[in-house]
Structure formats: structure tokens, C-alpha cells
Length: 120
Image (cartoon, rainbow, N blue to C red; front, top):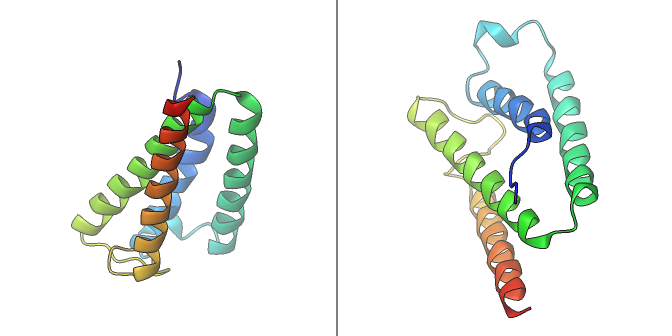
């Protein structure tokens, strides 16, 4: 089984740039592209990756593992950016209750799907 493939980079690379931009907006490497373009690119890539992953495989276990990877990657990225001294302008940080709710709901869904697959 292959849980991560190269097409996923179309999602993770721009996501990484967006998160860095959110935590460190004053970096000179982000000044030449307007923020709205970043937002539209990431929204498009999120939608594309959601549909593409579903169309790419019917293996539900593979989808669960890709969700685990995605959540782990986001948490790792948030930790690295926070430890590096960044602070999220959009509120995607560990001090925001909304972030914790999303993390808990994501973990609950992953655990639920994994248990459901183990029963089958």
C-alpha cells in the first residue's frame, strides 16, 4: 500500500508556504505575491486533493492513513513554526480553542474510521 504519493506534494508544498506566510508575514519572499492569490491557490488545492484522493483509491485504510499523515504534518508544521517564534495571524495556533476543536474532531473521526475498518 502506498500512503503518500507525489501528487500529494501539490497540496503539501503550497500549504507549507501558506503556513509560513501566516506565521511570518514579513518575510521578503512573500511580498511579491498578494495574499488573496495564496488563499485561492490553497483552497483550490484542498478541494482538488480531497476529490483526487477519493477518486484515486477505494481503499478506505489507505484514506485513513493519509488522513493521519495530513494531521501529523499540520501539527508538526505548527509546532516548528511556533517554536521558531512565529505567531499565526489567522488564528491557526495552539492558543486558539477552534484549532483544538478541529484537532480533536479529526482524531475522533480517524479513530472511528479505523475501528470501523477493524470490525470488517
